[in-house]
Image (cartoon, rainbow, N blue to C red):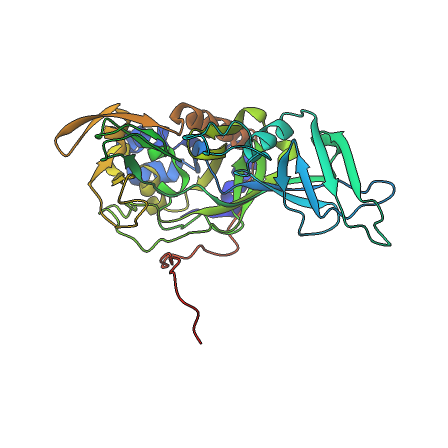
Length: 396
C-alpha cells in the first residue's frame, strides 16, 4: 500500500517511477502484478478527441463608460450574457450568426464556438460586439472592439462533460448516407466510426473511480486543472465486462482549467458536416498506484474493452436500445471489422497518437516534479442511471 503523500514526496524529489497506460501493460506482464505495484508510482492516461460539452467563462473588464452587456458576439458567434455585466460564457457548439446550418443539406458548419476557443488559446485577435439596454450605472448601449486572451482578466475553460468512459460505435443500416456527430456514415453499413483512446482513456483505467473524483488534478490541454463535478450524463450503472470495464458510455467528468496556460495544439475547433461545430481537446489524468488492484485496472488492454455498435439511422435517434453487436478496441484499431457477417471499414474521430503524446507529456511533467497529484475531495457516484426527457401533457 502507498499513499498520495508518499507518492508526492517521490515526485518532489524526482524519484517517482511513472509509466504511461500503454507502457504499463508490458511492464506488468514482465514483472508480475505485485512486483510492479511496489515499483510503479503513477500511470498516466490520456485522450484526444471531440468533446461537445465544453466552453469557457470570459471576463472583459469594464469599458469607459461602463456597459452591462445583454447580448454579445465574438467573431459573430453568440455568447451568453446572463451572468454579470462583462462576464460571458462561450459554448463550443454555438454557431456563427447567420450560419445556414443544414438549410442547404447537409451544411458545412464552417465556424463556431470551438473555433473561437481555438483562436483564443492561440493568442489571435478577435472582435467583440456587445449591446445593452443601458442603466444609470452602466450607461453604454453598444461596444465594438478587438481583443486577445491577454486582454482578458480571466479565461477559464469550464466543461460540463468530458472524458466519456466508453462510447458508441456508429454505423448506418439505411440505404442513404447520414451525417452525425460521429461523422459521415455511408449507406448499407459501408463504414463505421468510433471515438475513444481505448486502453489509454482515463476512466477505462479507473473503471470504479477509485482514484479519479471531484478535486482530482488533471492535464487539460497543457494547463493544470481539476475535476470540479461529476460530468453531465454520468451514468455508471450499466453493463460491464468481467474485468469491470463498462461496455457503454457510463462515467463522465466535468473539468476546468485556466485557458491562458493551455497549449494551442491540444485545443482545436472542428466542423462536422451535416451536424455542427465542436471542439477537440487533449486531456491527461494521472492514476496513483496505491494498491495492486488499482495497478491491475490500469493494465487493461484494447482487446478487453468492448463498445456497442449502434445503428445511427434508426436505433440511435429513436432510442430503441438495440445493439447490433459489440467490438473491442483492438478490432476497431485494425481498420476493418466484421458486423453481421459483413466487412466494414473503420474510422476514428479521436487520435490515439495524440493521446499517447499527452500521456508522455504528463509523464515527463510528473518526473520533473512539476505536476503533483491531488486526492479527490469527493468520490464520483458509482450507482446512478441516466434519466431521459419524457414528453408529457401539463397536469391540471
